Length: 434
Ligand code: ADP
Ligand code: SR1
Ligand code: MG
Image (cartoon, rainbow, N blue to C red):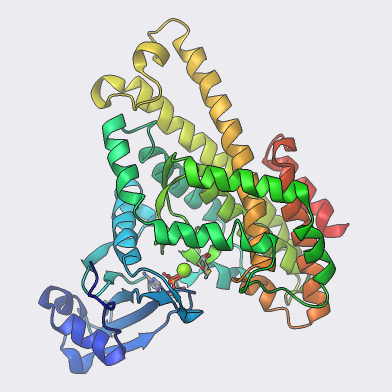
């Protein structure tokens, strides 16, 4: 475990010395410590992130590494909110597991050091940018939907009992169930705090005071969120990223990388899918008061909502079908035995298709419900999003937030009433103008 009392906090000098003491990492930077520059770039809520750059193999190929340290508290609150530094172990394990499932979209971990709660990983150099920042600046990313769909389908299928044997799957559920400090944080800040009085809640006040009071008295919303919380607590479908908002993706026009899976655990698939959809929709509702003409970006955001869901389904089902047909070699996973669902079984193909339809329909509903909960928590809870926060005029911001809150509530409470992703984007368009 991390040292008693927690790991020793690194500063810029400490980060450079840390790399210097590990020749295999120092070699990647090139030169020696005196040639290196270090900056702390942590703009997330929880940890400290240093970029250490060196001459590498010359001006064409400079060397650089990211050093991320978990201290035993939540960075954006301070020591008043303790949080186990063991989260770094789960983040390193999840990065390695996700990279094994989907190498094109997950950075490489070079080192995990339990004592110091440090991860050293591949640096995603500029023009890579945190997706949320690109969205706030008005960018559109033509490959984003297909990349995120690939990431979701591969990580969520390959870690599930649809792919793994039951013993393999159960061992992983047991391992990641120990990331319970991080799950508890989500249980509190996503599923509980926004629905009643809580120390860290905040919202645009007084503009949204009435909306928040209405939410706290909204039996249908409170029932829906409690049902989702039950799923979050008890439905161990796949290894989730656990925090897949637009601040956890780094992008260029050609590449997409998922970072920061420190909340990883075995949970409901819809939680990851919903997190991503929610954050696209938050940007969509913020866009009316972000600078510049955003109409093209709005169209693209809604297309991305549709195509990430549709692309996820196609790829997830493709992996699943192939695995069942390929069952002889790989066991077929624990859900659909080839003897029952394989092409040689009586009605095997049709049974698999029906089974897949039923599962996907449940996943869609879950994804929308979780998306709704994720939108609401970013307006009423502790952690807000730059998309909305960057709107300086409080009345204008509250207008965007009110529309987003109302739409989030619709997804949360009526998740079962949308027949497909198109229906969701049509409803979002109405909510935007209405
Ligand atoms: P937290 O766990 O606190 O949310 P993140 O993992 O989101 O921290 O990292 C915070 C910031 O550090 C990111 O927003 C990004 O700017 C930068 N960062 C993190 N990982 C990388 C990476 N592999 N390459 C480049 N920058 C990174
Ligand atoms: C204290 S809540 C901080 C939030 O930031 C992380 O990225 C997670 O979304 C978490 O809920
Ligand atoms: Mg983060």
